[in-house]
Amino acid sequence: MPLTVLVGTQWGDEGKGRAVDVLSADAGMVVRCQGGTNAGHTVIAGETILKLRLIPSSILRPAVPVIGDGVVIDPEVLLGEIDALSAQGIHCDRLLVSGNAHLIMPYHRVFDRVIERHLGRAQLGTTRKGIGPAYADKAARIGLRVQDLLDMKIFGQKLEVNLKEKNAVLAKVYNQLPLDAKKIIAEYEGYAERLAPYIADTSLAISRALQGGLHVLLEGAQGTLLDIDHGTYPFVTSSQPIAAGILAGAGVGPCAVDRVVGATKAHCTRVGTGPFPTEIEGDIADRLRGVRGELGAEFGTVTGRQRRMGWLDGVLLRYATRLNSLSDVFLSKFDKLSGVGQLKIATAYRYEGEVYDEFPPHQTIFHKCEPIYEELEGWEEDISGARAFADLPAAAQRYVRRVEEIADVPVTWISVGPEREQLVSTATVSV
Ligand code: GDP
Ligand code: IMO
Ligand code: MG
Image (cartoon, rainbow, N blue to C red; front, top):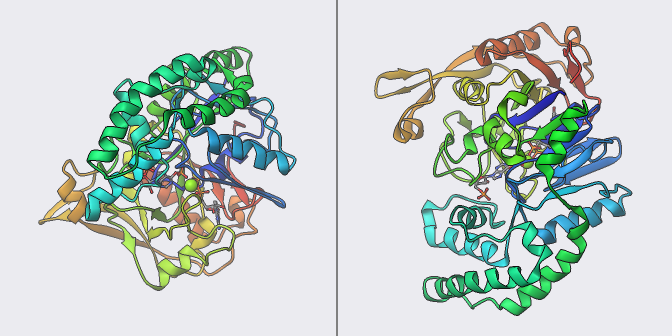
């Protein structure tokens, strides 16, 4: 009963969609476990280009797609996604949606917007999809869950209680118009009817799939440094994108795990505000980012924002190995390093004369530190046609080997382009 966890090791957008498409080739079930419509996972296979928000990135594969307990679901976006896929001939009939997953409500989106505005210069740069406010209500135990859609009477009662408080705060603190309960109930009644056939006990379904010998893949969203506990708080998301959070969101225990794969970009990116020690600007950053509209260019999948660019940060990669118990790295965007010239990887930070070779214990150090770089020889060759490790130039091979030493786990997959077949796999065991 092989269970694989796929986790992002940086600040999101590491190519998790691309990795899941590869790793799910033989999977029986693939599960989204946390986060919500803040995620944007790209899958490219032939002519098909998908930018997925809630539907697992294995949707082009035979695996059963599952949305687990830890996800916050915006039903309008989910149904829109199902319809858009269906219009492309991709059907989600076998989708299972956890009844325990929380619902994103219209007031969550409003709060996300007004709280950000209220924060002014201190704003996080959220995706404005209502993620933080929805998880806040979940923690406060006033959230509405997918299973509430199955009993609209309970749904209405919970909504009334919520709206009383939400509308008062919206009006008195944020100068916003109140939201109308009847309108929301009518809207969610429509969603209830369409979502009902998908609602299931997903933790049980996963357990049965594992017992039946199927390969189950848990698809993380966001990334390790966006984790609410272990990331660059407060510049994080409101869920736990580390492996333990993914397992909790799926409803699976840790001993079931066989493999934890860390999706890692060969360079690093970040969207939104917050510290980023290896950030670079200028020609190399522009080159790595690519041009808006071209395949694989670094513009937000959800918000269209230009992503901030930087060198690979080895300190954070080691941190990700520790936090997630990584067993393998899936290295993406390796083709983008061709022709860049001399390459850099941060191996430690310096702050006020002290050297830190682990993630610093205080936020001020991380905000103000200077990265200490190791320089590596670059290569000029286009490597997007490489399909075996031996096809890579010697300098590219050395870069991969150095990443393995720093991460202290093997780089088992090297992605050399955004498309499905643009891959070098050194996997000795099939996942
Ligand atoms: P995710 O959120 O982790 O799934 O990542 P995104 O889909 O938001 O962003 C990753 C971007 O990199 C997408 O545009 C992918 O098509 C692209 N991409 C993934 N792997 C590669 C690769 O190896 N080379 C190139 N050039 N692009 C890649
Ligand atoms: P995927 O799954 C990159 C970032 C936002 C912001 C912070 C908080 O595609 O890798 P939120 O809306 O979650 O409250 O925003 O987290 N963020 C992401 N950045 N990729 C993502 O998802 C992200 N999801 C959230 O930009 O800085
Ligand atoms: Mg993304």
